[in-house]
Amino acid sequence: MKGEELPLRPDLAGVGVEIRVIGNDGGEKLSLLSGVISRLDRNALEYDPEGGYRDFNTPYYQASAAASGGSSGSPVVNIDGDAVALLAGGRADKASTDYFLPLDRPLRALECLQEGKPITRGDIQCKFLLQPFYECQGLGLSPEWEAAVRKAFPKETNMLVANLVLPEGPSHGKIKEGDVLVNVNGELLTQFIRLDDILDSNVGRPVKLLLLRSGEEVEVEIEVGDLHKITPDRFVSVSGGSFHNLSYQQACLYGVACKGVYVCEADGSFRFDNAGNGWLVQSIGHKKTPDLNTFIEVAKGIPDKARVVVTYKHLRDLHTLHTTTMDIDPHWAKKMKLAVRNDETGLWDFSDLADTLPPVPPVPRTASFIELVHISHQAVADLVRSFVYVNCTLPMSLDGFVEGRREGMGLVVDADKGLVIISRAIVPYGLCDVSITIANSIFVEGRVIFLHPLQNYAIIQYDPKPVDVPVLSAKLSRDEITEEHCTCGH
Image 1 (spheres, rainbow, N blue to C red):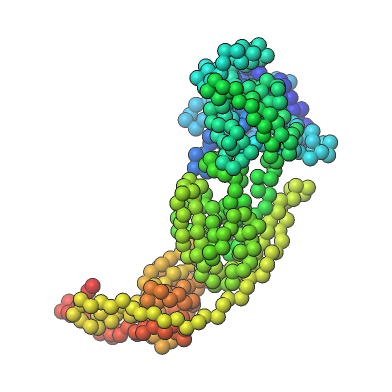
Image 2 (cartoon, rainbow, N blue to C red):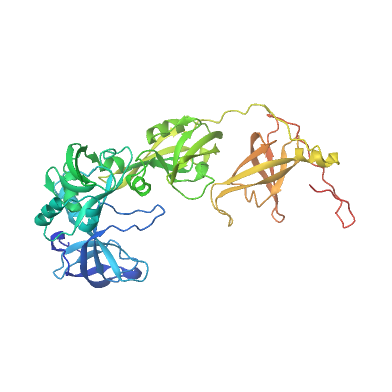
């Protein structure tokens, strides 16, 4: 079947233009929705305030086409069959309003591909919004400049206003939130499309911006950065977790500097106790990780089964430093892999970075248990020496148990052999990593040696040789407890 191309005609979009949305509305095989474009100057939507993707520095077109889920990305065509926009999204409050993405920049990208030219993308790490003239007047737009803009663009009712300036970016210290953009390189402009065209054509070169700040004219010179360099094109997988440099999207979402190692998949050894995403790794094993390359070099030097200190921050609160200890267990994924996006094939090229270093042999460690001095029964006080803390990491979901971590107390039944009995709610199956903490200070590796098929208990074992601690085997009675028995509980 030969496909037919749709001509891209962003110049034909206008208020009052009758359109059709061709898509899969509501998951249907094919649907045609009708509507009329009502405005061309709506600011981009904020789809997900908790970290989702969103457009910015682009206008949206507005129409009432009553589209629903399944039509995102569908072409919006006019009566002649020319594509004038793409469906971007709609309202979730049962209103029939929909929003379209203009095709000016996609058309430029297509032409660059057809001509074999690189698709340059420029950015100054400043988020602008379209604001009406009366809003701009309150921000310092003078009557003279307003008259000049209205004369140059009789149909325009908005100007571009700086809404967010990223720290340490090209605009930092030069543009301030609330600045009204008047012209770029001496050219008056009021629309994102022309601003994007200038920035895309001047990557690596300076541009001059004339701004109005509280009624004062401010001219600044800013070097245009490369948008591709702050858009991650690679990620690394280490011990079940995945990491890449912080993206421009996430930096704009939280208003932070576009730098740092972002945890895009907090899994495996790097499953943080705090739920959710948005974490930036600050250091591993007391070695700072400011970027992905440094992170890779640090991760290469971590041996299997090592217990390291990891510090991290959340994008929502960079003032709070979180600290945790993690058991690095790359034996579930022995190779550290790097994935790089291949723009020619459209695929990801995977390569092995390094083999896992062998584990460091355990050394004997000494510790002591806490003493319960206010307990009259010495046997009960000594029972604390029979309890250990067990941490079980499940690398995958099996038998109805979801992957993750489970923690609980185990009872030492044979200190000489290192045998510990524990509930199967903590150790549900044998395909897992078991870590045992003795006397709240010594960490040893454990292994599952028995799972009772009917009763809810398992037996795990640790090597008692490197544990120089007076662990006590619990005394187990064969007598059944009855109502007349005297017990002591603490």
